[in-house]
Length: 376
Image (cartoon, rainbow, N blue to C red; front, side, top):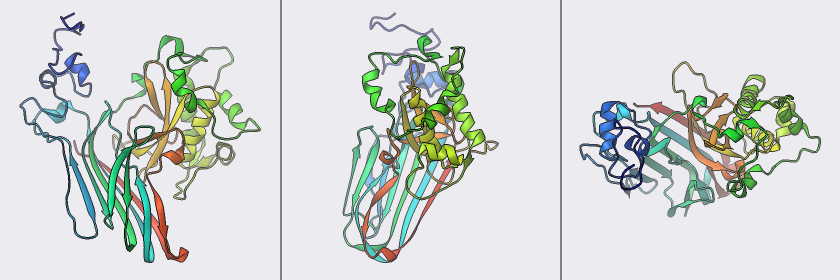
């Protein structure tokens, strides 16, 4: 232990001068190869060892009377070892377009397209292109810490087009990396007195179930001998939805009720997420709805939900915190999943919503296109 009270984790992992934890723990997305350790030794967090540092900047570019383009450049990385040591690099392009037969006026619109930043996903660059150009534009954080862009418009137009393009590092975490505290490894367990006050609203049921249909379905995953492993229970529930339910894309707003999804045995990723959230809440787990993007980490994985925004579940597990479960694809962990918004209920995590004024017959339709590419 050094003079700061920090316990070294071995001589091969030198302390970072910029943190009170070992360098490789301060930057867990780095590998443990010698060149990666060298980068970490120099305290890299959005900069590189040879001091090729890209300073944060934000600005407006591309005014042409109809479009507003916002650019944010977080890091300018040039070091030859960085990509080898860092998380996989992704670019995500998300375009939503509303078309009208004749010009209409637009009210306030709120956009949730900026990925959340964390130890497992780090935003490098963000670009937002809005047509027509908003008269006012600002950012805020909602009650869950999601980034929300607010746009106000003047005048009329026959199209509303929003294009978001981001580049980020994403660290896939698998089921094997979920470490649950000993007391919570078997179900049932009780959340700690420190955690429970902040988890209560995420445990509360949101849908009526007078016939206890969802309760009975959830209870079927609990063993009768009292040896139900927590991770096994949650994993099997997600895998059962993937295996026994049919995925059907649907662009209309809203979700089915959990009971309806159980009866139809089909639905969208939103429907499956809501079903699993209600089912685990029936068992006493804290769960939240997640909106984001899905991609194939390898070309051999045929994940559903691509080409559009995707939805899945986060469940709070002592020892690992909020853990991702994707019942549409049977994913445990965040492999192939990029978080944008986390909320208690789906209506709190809508990617784009707002109002327009004009003749009802003016509305032609909406198109959504999402493309995720690995660039390193």
